[in-house]
View 1 (spheres, rainbow, N blue to C red):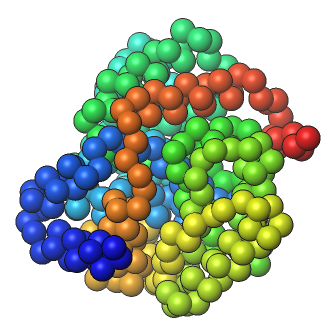
View 2: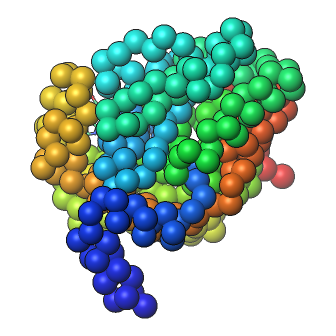
Length: 308
Ligand SMILES: Nc1ncnc2c1ncn2[C@@H]1O[C@H](COP(=O)(O)OP(=O)(O)O)[C@@H](O)[C@H]1O
Ligand SMILES: [Mg+2]
């Protein structure tokens, strides 16, 4: 079985982008919502979301990013542009979600959350419906919705994670980041979230040490919480990363052969094969579930209630 899968992957790699797309479309019809999140800030979420999205585009996967950091819009800074509109304008100015969508490199689409993200908490049902409909309309045009969230365990952030199909929990090998990754997994476990969790070890010295470090967190969550977390992959520490950020050109475009760009590219390939296809209607459910959580959870930033 494993050999067969490997053989198929090799074959797909050898085909043209168009042929790759046709094969993958047939195997993975349906679009998926993947939240990229972390316990601690500054671990590389935005960098990974943007470059993963571009790597997916390169593989012929139609990808859209929801830039959902509550305070700081990040993706636009990495790309060096100022969004004209944000999600909030869908409610305020009655624009469609498509109107606020921005075009990034390689045909990547981006929805700037901006202040609209924090305002979601105060939307009424009709307003949430408007946003749901906007997402619904776009769903058939995309294979992936990647959500770049803020860090931490506040209800606002957790609502994105819990509403997604899959969450990539980004951490790095430093003890505070590892502890916060564990804390985030524990918070998700406490609210009995059904989202499937995968760990990404960014800034690893090597792929091997990154995986070893990741497995320590994964084994701990299994032992202490009986919560399954998968290992999604390691991204190596790479000085090209800071250079790409300062030039406001994505790493996979500016330095495609750099170690971190290669690792993120490999991750995109694994993603296509590992994350299960979802039925249509996932995006609608994603926004709906999020809206419901926003309205029912306490507004204070003090985390979810302890589980009973
Ligand atoms: N693999 C890496 N190697 C070296 N530096 C990295 C790597 N990934 C991220 N960084 C650095 O970490 C900083 C924070 O990344 P960012 O994506 O903004 O984090 P977050 O979105 O989690 O706050 C960036 O300045 C970037 O240069
Ligand atoms: Mg960020």
